[in-house]
Each structure stands twice: as structure tokens, then as C-alpha cells.
Image 1 (cartoon, rainbow, N blue to C red):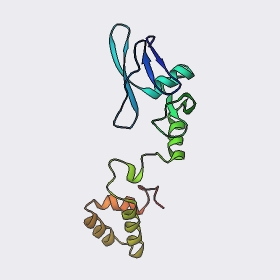
Image 2: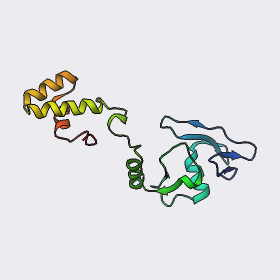
Image 3: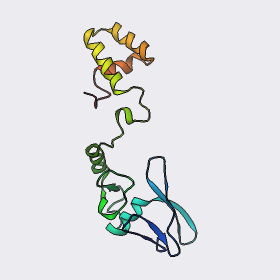
Image 4: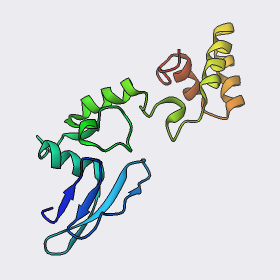
Length: 156
């Protein structure tokens, strides 16, 4: 985008003004930029700043990653190019991974998972699984996966 510049403070501006930013559903700052020929594109600020200060993506599969895990800090020192695997490792390290209660489709809380596992350990039978499934209004399969630690591995 030749008509735009990224600042070392994490902003993006055109030749005329600083662009207003907004947060998307995932919590990233976004701006609208126009390519030559009038093509409109909504882009993440962290990607634009990373491109401006660290060069273009090394490969199509690379991500612009936040070094400290804070999505709102888009300064060049907090950004780098990494792979999806590296970005996932960062999320685990920073505690921002979308697992357990943080997952938008989670049906249980961590305390409920501990309760399910504790009650199953007291009486590890098919009847216990059935009773727990009815109590939490989920399938027996869901309870079985919890007690066998196929799901909710993050809860000790």
C-alpha cells in the first residue's frame, strides 16, 4: 500500500490523516486502506506494522505474532513473523490459548469438569456416566471423553 505508512507507535496513516482503528470480534485492531485503483481492504494493524518494519511475509503461511501476547500493542518491537506452530506455542506460553472455559463453545466450567471426574472416580461405572450426562444435559459420550481425558486435557 504505497499511499500509507505505519508508525513505530502502532498506527497507520495516509498522506492526509491518521486512520481510525476499531476492534474486530477477536480483539485485533483493524483499519480500512485503499489500494491503487480504489480497491478497498480491511486489514489488521499488526500485520501492516509488521510488514512495514520487518518486511513482507517470508511465506504465505506466516503470521504476524505479538511477542508479549497483547493484541493491542502493535509496536514493531512487539511484532515478528512466525509460523502457525510458533504462534500456537506463543499462545500457550502467554496464557491466551483458546481452550477450556475460554473456548466460545465450552459447555462446562473447570470446576464442573473436576466435579465430573471426581464423581466418576468414586464410582467408575456406566450408571455414573449416565447419571452425570443427565445432570449436565449432555451425551454420555461427552462425559466419557471428559473422564477418559480425551477432552478438557488442560484441567488437571
